[in-house]
Length: 222
Image (cartoon, rainbow, N blue to C red; front, side, top):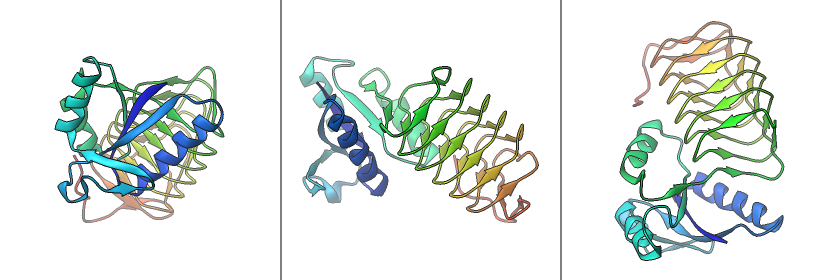
């Protein structure tokens, strides 16, 4: 059984912890060793019976104490692509990035998944799909056949990403979004909740509505 540290002690961190508990209930795999969060104000606190041990520097120390690079496992419970990129740069070569997949998720044997992915309850990942590093798919979302989810991208609850869709690196797809087949959502784009996407989305754009159209103000994304 490996020690697992969850990076991010907010709401999504708590949800990922619940997924780890569900995995362990099917046959114990991880010891939830603690939360890692750079917010000093919560260090030492217990959140849902898991202690916030400190920030990234503390995780590096724990890795060395356990035997060096790769001795402990971690996963990022964050939606911000900018934050995930920075953490990956800092901790690559120190921790082993784990894929955390809820037991109720359905993942095709022909899907390719990178490292550090989080796939939450009742997600469906279809055949010949690709999910990049440090991606997140939240509850009850669908990734259709031949679709691609780029590194650091996040898909929220109840999204329908249909066949052949390409979601670029760092893009954010908010809850209850539908994307028709073969659309390209470029890097760092932001699709607002409830939108229906019929056209390609430019890099860094924010779109909203049915049909989805650009907003005047772009989100702060990195």
